[in-house]
Every structure is written in C-alpha cells, then in structure tokens.
Amino acid sequence: MATQRIAIIGGGPGGLMLARLLQRHGKCPVVLERDRHAEERPQGGSLDMHSETGQYAMERAGLREAFMAAARPEDQGDRLYNAEGELLFDRNEPTDDRPEIDRSVLRQILLNSLTPGTVLWGRRITRIAPEKGGFVVGGDGWSEQFDAVVGADGAWSVVRPLLSDAVPLYEGVTLVELGELPRVLWRQNDPRGKKDS
Image (tube, rainbow, N blue to C red):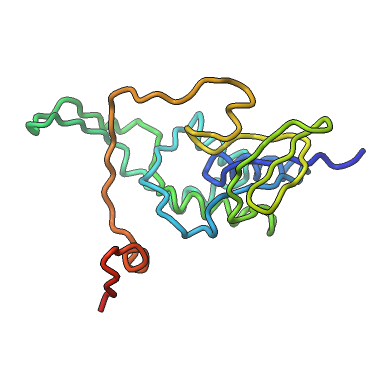
C-alpha cells in the first residue's frame, strides 16, 4: 500500500505536535506554514501546560525532558484586575501542575524533533479542493495532492469551509499583548524610512 500523504496546514504548536506524533507512528506528514522561516514573527506569550493535556502530549511525543528543561513551574499563578486596579481573582495553588513555557521555545522544541524537510515554509494556502479521492492544496505558483488535510491554522482556518459554513464571531472581549519587536522588523516597516543607528 502506498504511503498516505497527510498535509497539516499551520506550523503552530498543534500542527507541529500532530506532525511529531504521526512521525512516531511511521507516517510522513507535511506541514505547510505561511511564515517564511521560524523566526519571521513573534509567536505570542506563554502557554500553561496542564498535566492531563499539554504535558501528556509532550510525554507521548517523547519530548518530556526537553519540555521540563524549558518550562517554568514557578509561573502558575493567575491574577485578574479591573480597570481601577482592584484585584478580582487570585489563584496560585501550590498543588497546580501547569507550568508555563514560551510559545517560541515550545515551537522550537517541536521543530527540532521533526524529520528535516517536514515543514515547508512560505506556503500561503489560497486553495483547498477535493479531488480524486483526496485534496489538492495550493497557493501562488504551486499545488500538491494529499490524501488527507488537517487544519491547524487558527480561527480563520482555510480548511474550515470544507467542513462548515461557520465563521469566527467577535464576542466583545479583546486581548492586547505588548512586546518588543526585533529592531530589524521595525526598520523594514518604518513608514518614515529611517534606519536605526
């Protein structure tokens, strides 16, 4: 029987974890990621990795040691304040088992665990269509045939329309995350065209 071709759309933690687990079971997935390389953009803040979910997945992926070396078990507290600075919620239980790990560090652990060439960078998907018992996935100037396609590309997934006409809706909650952009990104995007000295 021919090897089944599996496309995973999205190279975030979910897509990379799935690729790692499939490889451990003898499959050959391909991760299609729109970023041109792993450091193209910030990956966001940190993730709580609960024992029954995230840590369990890392264990199954054979990556527990790498995870524990990078995780922060001391960062398990949650505090919520209102606009006036009044503390509304405070949780910091010593029995919690949900250490934090930076998304960029987790992504790198997962990338390092994959067979070289698993992730195809710079693959922005513009088309997914059923064809010949599988799917054609393509973008500008390229297309490939796959037996199965998995959407791991977030809220505005290009895979979702194949399954449902549901679309994400704004629920009235906004999260703002502040951070420092690398200086090279600031220079490239500075509308004044000025260079850092």
